Length: 128
Image (tube, rainbow, N blue to C red):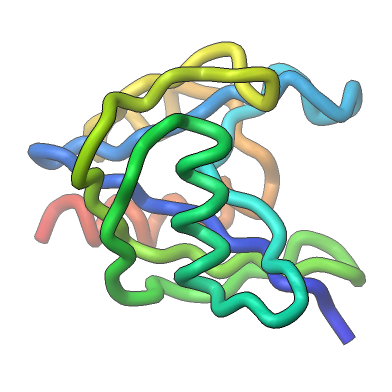
């Protein structure tokens, strides 16, 4: 059985929010769509709202799921469209930088492999 990891495609004016990881060491410096693991008894949407609050200090409305991508044998990534309802994304201990990227800028950062696999789907969503 796989553990679900949720990620937010935080969209604002045709741009998406990306966050650069600080740990674990083998992933430090790579970029991701912010989010994290779903805890037992939590829905994916509730987990994503909690993770965005904890990691970026924002409140968000969680929208439709864009898809699911494998991370490895133990984890799967589910990405959801999301909109910030309050706050401005601010890095914390999990991330050292946050950037807003337009569809044609998605390839300008070094993504985690699972997030990179979703870029075509994300770009299509931004261009809608």
